[in-house]
Length: 195
Image 1 (cartoon, rainbow, N blue to C red):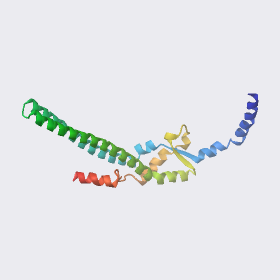
Image 2: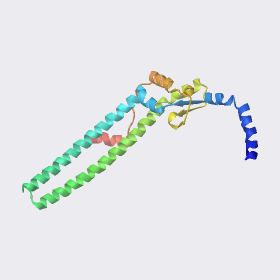
Image 3: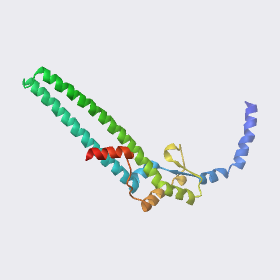
Image 4: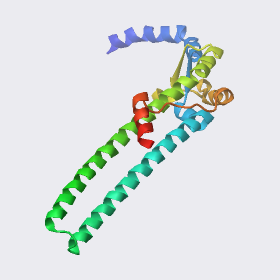
């Protein structure tokens, strides 16, 4: 233990002696931004989230309408059977057809979930690309070497936090952006289905 202490004491003294100025210059080279705040507080982030929400609401309305239609059809089929309007054979045929429709509906719901996941990723990517000039400008103006997202930084001092500065710059330069939320081939299918 004493031998280990003797080896580390000179190293510790060297770090303290030569490293006193190092943290300040290293600190000047690193900036921290909060991407979640940028996404929430910039006009651009709000505009892109609005586009996502509109898309999600349209899909939700389609899903609800289809679900309600299938539920109504099932209730009507059961009513016809209970009132002896249809035979058991006709009931079974219609029930089988309705189950197929419900299976397709469940597949459609899964596709909508995947579409919304893709759209969310596309929106985040578009946002990140759009703010890149402002991030580069802040890095350059602070003579920094690197900027990290606060989500991956364990701890930092307030001096290296530049989120508020970025919000101002982004809002001055860009407040809205039409985002391609779906890949072109899928967007074409959606447009065709809507016609």
